Amino acid sequence: AVAPLLDTPRSIVVVDKQVIKQTGAATLVDALRTVPGITFGAAEGGNPIGDRPFIRSFDSQGSTYLDGVRDIGAQNREIFAVEQIQVVRGSDSTLGGRGSAGGSINIISKLPERDTSAAIDISGGTDNYKRITGDLNVRVNDMIAVRLDAMWHDQDVAGRDQIFQKRWGVAPSITIGMESDTKMTLSYYHLDTDELPDSGIPFLYTIGNTPNLGYSYSEPALGDITTQGGMTGHVKRSAYYGIKERDFRDSKTDQATMRFEHDFGDISLRNTSRFSHTYQAYSFLLPDDSQGNVYGTSATNTGANVTTGGYVWTRANTRYGYTDSIINQTDLYGTFETGALKHSFAVGAEFSWEEARRGVFVTRGFVSTSGNNVGQEILSTGSTLNPRCNTASIARAYCVSLFDPQNRPTWINYANDLSNVPAPIVKSLPIQETENDA
Image 1: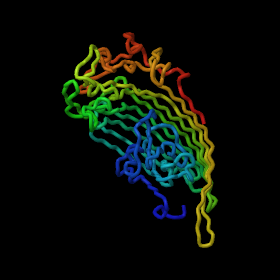
Image 2: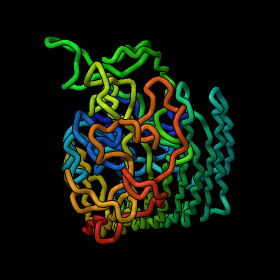
Image 3: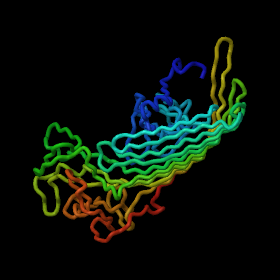
Image 4: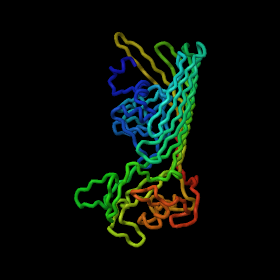
């Protein structure tokens, strides 16, 4: 660009390495908390877990770039190999093409520099927070420089029982032609994560069981609670409604990039090729409040059905899948003058191939007979029972106590919601998986 960033007539924010370091950011979400106008989704509406930024209320997950090249695939991006983050707020299709209605995010990687340097950061904190990052840059000779960034992270989550996050990553890179007009940079990025997802606290009421016919205010079931059946108890903010031995989320990200650049003086030509592979799998229980079982739907129970409240049906949310992409992008940019006016220009072309495939975890042979997934295999979690909570589902740990959710029977996956035969959890059949190619 010709003008300084301050004089550019766009809403642009740059989060540089100093801000990232001073705020103690460990992820992209942490770093962008300092930028107004950006919020993050939480895998609502069947979307996979991963960074899902909303810029000015528009979903910008598809408008996230890594070193100027579109970065697809659901993932939780780390910050250990990031030099700075550039945020353009407002419609950005002239630069970003498809998407970019609310804006775009460009992540700039740490790549080899001219001067040799080394840095190690060690962080520790409450709730078993432990983090180590290393950054080594070596100038081999006048033409070659290499850089290695690495990270190890392990923590529990403040105020939440059971929840943990573990990950490690490495990002080596080499640049040939540091002082010449023509240079080539090769880089690789790997991130491996292992965590226990947290689905939070259930709401107390539904639209069908609010205690007042007029105005009712529904909020998370926290503190001292009295159900419709008269049961009283206290719900802690740290209450965890999943099963630590069962729930999980694993993800892997691998990216290999090759970039050629040539400087003609006032004009530069750059070509970038990248292969990217992202994989994630997760299965965790959510405290489902949609059936009215938290507050209750009646003052007394009917037979084996528990309808007086005080129980939470734990619905399973599962997914596995991968995204592969091969992208080649060419950029031509520079400056020129016409009299007293100075101009800048940028022209680009992109060729890309993308493939995404996903499925869910199921109980083999247990087929749904109602809802949107009729005829498809599902997981044994009590979803076919009506009402969800009864003496049998409580004995199977499908429904747990609102006040003491970890005081539950030993969990076993059965062949179906009424069977007593143990069965393994498996991936869905290939014919039931979804694949997209573009």
